[in-house]
Structures are given as structure tokens and as C-alpha cells.
Length: 356
Image (tube, rainbow, N blue to C red):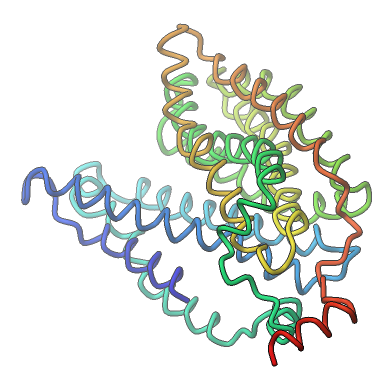
């Protein structure tokens, strides 16, 4: 509930933030602090959302259930693109820069209230309730996580790095790339991104079904191979300046990004036990997204300016895909394990004795 309130409040505050002309340097300082609050909220929410879905899902359909987390993410990006495109198309440049840009941020206030109402109607998962009843909840989850799961965090973090990079390349950077390298207008670039985002949301459940069928390791290999093979033609087509070619190019990148996102949602929960699942998966997710996701637009822009090639970000993504493949294959197959790791009879007796 706190993460929803924090995200809604921070986003709404951006919509009412005074400009630089009004308060000077405090405007960018406040914007930076608010963006940090948004990141703190998102970082605390995503891993928990994955764990919540996974712990309610049947063992043989966990990736399919978990695929609806990236469905919601891509759908939200699509909704944002629709709002931005509608404003760009209906307002003049002066109106957009004056007040139009504030409108999408202000929508967060009622959305936050809806989200808070829904969150307060949910119960804890059966898996978490079981470890709570057995007094098996970690008293110091961060310490226990770092002591017992450091290797798993590093290996899974290597793969999630590709998820983060491909996600930000696809959802955030490509709209800029289409304009800078492809010469498309801002409105046209947003339209291309919107089509690709809807496509990505639509194929997430299919990616979940695929992962449940072939297993996590095979999905990791497929995702990495797809991105290594498709990223170069994707960037090449997106820089062509043609609308149809740009759409196809972004969709090529979307397929690999979706597979990464869906299998990541499953692995975040399956790699760690219930007593430390939230903490361990959140550390892994945020570490990877901080290092490779948030820096993706900056690194891509720097690579282009340094090398003089608009295609240099493609080679960066290929290199990270090789790292991700090594990390992902170092993890065990987890597609059929149970997440309801309730203590056995002997441990139950010991726990009851300790509690008494």
C-alpha cells in the first residue's frame, strides 16, 4: 500500500511542480528527488508483485501467471504513449510546453486511490501465511539474503541485466532513437512505440506458456539468442526512416525483451525461498535495473557520439546478452519446483519448541 501511495503522490507532484522560471534551481532539484521517490516505489513493488502472483499460481503455470506482470507494465507504457500522442496531436507546441505536459502526471492521483482500494482488499499469499504460522519468517532478511544467496543473486542479476537493458531500450530509448537516427517526427515515433507496446503486451502470455512448456533454462537461451540475432537488424530498420520498417524493427526487439521479462518474473520468485524471497528478489532486480536499465539511454547516446555509428547500441546489447546467457545458465532449472516450502515435521517440531 505504501508503494502505491508513494508512486501516486510523487507522480502527481511532478504535475504541479513549479518551473525553473518560477523557483530557479530548486525546480530540477525537486524533480530529481521526486524521481528518486518514484524509483524507490517501483523498486519495492515489482519483485513483490511477481512473488504475489507466483505464490498463488499452480506450479505448472507459474510463468503464464507471472506474464501478466509485464503485461501490466507494457500496457501502462502504452497508455502513457496514448496520452502523450493525444496531447501532441491536439495541442499546439506552446500549449504543450506551457501546461499540456502536466496532464498525464495529474492522472496519477485518481489511479493511486483505485490502486490503494484494490491493494487493501488482498490477503497475504498462502506460502507467506504458512511460514508466518510456523514462525519461520526471517528476522533479518537482508543479512540472511546476502549470507546465503549471494551467488544466486549474482547469477540471476547477470540475466536480469539483459531484461533491464532490453526493456529500457525498447520502451524508453527507441522513441528517441526513431527521431534522432530515423528522422521521424515526435508524434510518429510515439505511434510506432505504441504499436510495439501493444504487440509486446499481447505476446506476454504466449511467452509465459512457452516458458512453462520448455523450462526456464531453455527460455533464457531462447531470449538471449533472439536478442543477439535480432538487435542489429532491429536498429538498422528503426534508423531507416520508414514507418513500416520502424514498426517491424521495434517489434523484433520486443520479442526478445518480452521473453526476458516473462522468464525474469518467474525466476525472481523461484530462485529464492519464501522467508527471504521478497528481499532477495528485490535486491537482484534493483541492482540490475540500476546498473543496466536506468543507464541505458545515457550509454546508448554516449556510444553513438563516441563511435559515430547509430548502430553501436546494438553491439552493447549483444555483449550484455552474452553475459546474461552465462549468468542464466548457471542457475538450476526451477520451472517445476514448489514455492510452498512449508517446513517438514522435524523442523515444525523444532520451531514449536523454540516458540514455546
